Each structure stands twice: as C-alpha cells, then as structure tokens.
Image (cartoon, rainbow, N blue to C red):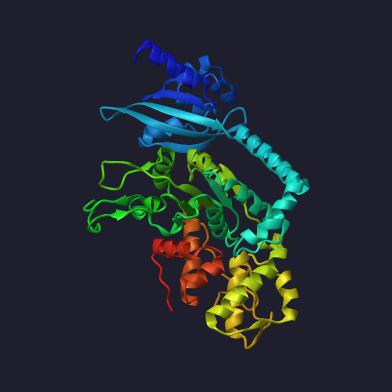
Length: 473
C-alpha cells in the first residue's frame, strides 16, 4: 500500500463514528482510533502500550472481543461494558494471511449514544404526531382515507395516524419496518402500503421468515440453477426476491432469521443484486422491501442475535401498530367485516346479538385482530341464527383459566428445575420442550398450539421439529 493510500485509510478510520481497534495475533494493540479513548477512559498512548489480555484483566474491556476471535477464528458480535460505565456493541473480524491469523480488526458503537438518539427520535415522532393532530391537512386527508383502505377497518385516531403515515411514504421506495404484537394486522397494512405505492401493479411477495429452515433459506430466497445441488429441480428455480421484482417483498417475523442468513440478506439489500445458487453471474433486482416483527429488534441486537448493520438498514421508516386493546373503536368494524365474510363463505345469514357488543368491547383480546376473528368464526359455527357473546372467549396465552381443562389445555405446567452445571439457555430449552410436549398430547393441531401460546403456526412447526415432537391426536 502506498503512503497516500495509508493516509486516506487512516483519515477514514480517524473520522469514523465507530471506534476501531487493530490487534496483533498475540493480542498486542497495534492501532486505536482517537475516539476510543473517550469511551474506554484511557489515552490512545496507554492503549497502544498494552494488550487486550491486560486490558481485559484491568476491566477496561469487559469482555475483550478480540480474545474471543483469537480463540475461535470466527467473526464475533457482543455487548461490552467499559470502565467508564458505558455500554458499547462491538464487532470483530479475523485477518488471515496464508491461512494463519495475523490480526483482529474490531469496531464498536456506543449504545449510550444510540439510546439518546432513540429517545430524541421518539420525541420528534411525538411532536410530528401532535402536529398531525392540529393540522388542517389531517382533516382533509382523513376525509378520503376511509374510502382508500379497502378491507381495512380504521376508526381509531391511533390507526388513522398509522394509515396516514403509510400513505405518505408509499410513493417512495424507503424500507418500512412494521412493529407490533402478534395479530395486530402487520401483513394487512403491508398489503395496503403496496396498493398505495407506484408498484401496485407488480407482485406482493409475502415471506414468513420463521417458516423457512436455515438450510433452505438461500435456495428459497435467491433461487438456483439446474444441478446446483442434489435434488435441485430441472431447469432451476427463481427465488422469492426475484419474484418480487417490480413489486414489494414483505419479510414477516424478520427477527427469526439466523445470523448466517442475516449476512446474506444484508448483502442483497445493500448491493441490489443477487446470485442464484450455482450461478456465477449476479443480476439486479428492483423491489421495495417491507419487514415486520413482533419482537424488540433493538433488544436482539444487544443480545447479539441480530446484526446491528442489518437493523440500521431495515429501520428506515419504523411504524408501530398498536394492540387492539388500545384502539377498541376498531372492534365494531372488524366484527362486521368478519361476519360478512363468514356469511358469504358458509352461505348462511347469521346476526350478532345486540347484547353481545358490551362483552366484545370489554375484552382485551391479547391475540388482537387474529384472536377476535378466530373467536367470531368459532362462535358462528357453534351458534344457530344468532351469535351470542356467551361463546367462550379464549384466555390470555400465558394465563391458565378455570375451564382450561375443558378446552383440552393443562391447568398447570411444571417447569424443570435448573440442573447442576446447566446454563439458562439449556434450562429454557428444556422448559420449552416440556410445554410443547404437553400441548402435543392435549391439543389437536399446530394451529391450536400457536393460538394457545400466542405465536405463529410456522413457529410452532419449527419448534416441534427442533425438539423432535409430534401431535399425538
């Protein structure tokens, strides 16, 4: 590398927001960016005169991510606590020469600053929301909004704000992240966003990330050429990303993606190009990306199970859909829409008793819109001409009810105690298997288990396969 190249590289690192460490294979600190001194509480000169082993012993690096890479030879991401009381998320990568580890390059970002930015963003979002409420433009937009929502029922102020925000960003190609509890309608609003967008004539490809095994994800998402692997279909297969060309790709349950898969997805998003398995040629794919999750992705980032750079790439327009208990004004419209669909599907006209409305409006519906629709269908099928609210309403997925045994659900589940030398992860896995095993004996289907646990049916299928369990009846 020429001297000017070295100066350019040094300038890039020194002015970067992240804090960089370069460590020899034996742990000696070769280089640190100037910003690292403020975070770790030691001058650059002291850091350069030390080693990562000594810095870990002194509590400056807690723990040292470079030591972890030196032990495994693999990239590592973890959260560190510094001697100055700050939390940083660090990523480290090995550098090999002729197959031998020669250095470790790590970068860290101060989570304390990130949390302040998130608080500032929340404040700005609240101010934006207040402005919408006061503006005359909101009233004018709201007047035409209902006619544009097709089958969505939006009556509450909270959901009207969400719908207005989606309609405003629909003409762009900005990535939208749908957040909210399971069953709040993230997929339905993603479809509406697609209908509002200039891509409405293109395809809407709905992908449940939890339903695709990690071993098949690359083939399913990127496609493959004929003969790419044993069992590949003759003529190859187009992947889900290519199927979304000219339209919208919706990735539901994005938090379920394994880290290895996240890396491949990030590269495809950044480059806008993909390569089918077995194909040396890359191809450009033009699509709009929308993702959804019922998990706290920022928490997954801190735990190291979700890539920070992917989180930043996806979190462009975050949209949080409130649970049904916070927007009860939407319940009547949802009930009437579902009742019309049931009457049309089963070719019989049934009515909801007027006395039932009070009970329906009082319920918290922890499973949100999905639970409300499922209850109404069960009530429809078990009633005569009039549906009454005394049809049992399912309890909260985590709370046992007095009549749980009548529904084929165990009243209590005994959790295994922590064995000697057993970690929390293994104990939780064993507890999960115990719960699933009991439900496999008492419930008739994976859909029933999913409703009982408050998770998606594909997640149940994946967990049963993971634990080697099957439905018993």
